[in-house]
Image (cartoon, rainbow, N blue to C red; front, top):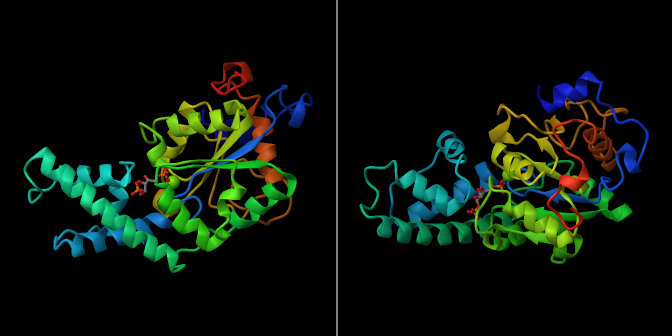
Length: 292
Ligand code: XBP
Ligand code: MG
């Protein structure tokens, strides 16, 4: 049975007990933010556009339309995505070495175009994101970035929307260059948990893609799934809550209590506390973090 079905069914509501209703040690201590698709719709309107600019700059006839890019998102990592696409093209360089070199050049150029694009403010934060971040900061709940993209790309996006001091808002920032294996491998989450010195059940990941969800779950971290444009219809299982975006409580499963309005930290705490009593999530002792 899927997560949201279990929770929507009601029998697994958290009984009174430890902090937040869960067993001792499982109270929410940090929010782990994905970037692409979660903080902003950067894939369709940012990375894809910039990849096409890079193709054009190198005189290549290749262009990725929205539908094809959606298929390519099954491959995480921009350079890896280029290699996956080349593997299917008759007009790609014949040797692996040449394809590697071309992918590196294209990826570097793509990132420069991407930085210009987001630096111009062309891609806003998704509605509800800034308010939820502010809510976390107001009560001192720690936040981290857990992403497959590069630190430079995160910086380009967040300095526009949160200011040049954006880094101070996050207790940890773990990016693509910090890991050996990108999502859906759990490494990015394991590193973030280590830096925060917490166990996986003390964290909550906000993700928009099945790959990101799988990565978090493989690290034992519960996930709130905020659907992005590319994953509006994707089958999602094993998230503690699934909804259309953080800007509204409408359409979320399980439904948050209270009147309509944006998703709040209290809503996240409610989902997180209820999670502790669903059997898919073992007790805190099973975690991989510092207190495991
Ligand atoms: C994001 C990615 C990245 C971006 C492009 O996944 O898979 O590859 O598409 O960025 P997530 P780079 O949102 O799960 O972190 O070109 O820097 O890889
Ligand atoms: Mg994402």
